[in-house]
Image (cartoon, rainbow, N blue to C red; front, side, top):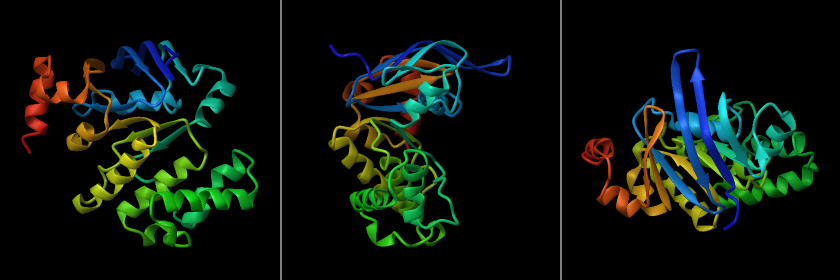
Length: 247
């Protein structure tokens, strides 16, 4: 069996001295695997995936991503960030730049890509998320769903090996959620390694190889989607699912 592309070994993180946000996290993710991470607010879901590209630092344990041990080595952090794309709840687009300029900024400034090549790659990714006709507009001229698709295209412009999604539909109106989830499902079909924090359980059933349920900073349960939704093992998982699937 090949080495996992992401490997958490007894990872712990605190905010300040009192809030133990991640507790002894052990988690391995294989290349091409698709994980959905769910759980109540404050359970550590977003913190966990933000550790993967060093947006959050952990204090104990080991975290290896694409053969790089994340810690104090800034070169390792930079190497990981070049291979890990992230899409946030809020779209985090630069409002003063056009869609195309948002997409070409990192490839030209971070990766040193020639401008012509960066534009070609950006247009390819915009076509991939079915929004190429909006290339010259500014983010505030677009709907929320369109902005999130731009954010996905921007993350893909550095050709990442891993994509992280932190509740990518939580800021969207209900009618816009499907268009964003459809794009993510297409990426999943293409074999992209993905970790997605979401409360969209229908999406989890359709896309995930594995569902991770977190509570109070711990991984309480992990299983394939069919078993997790139809036969949850823990009372905490059963209680969570009864509430979230009852709406």
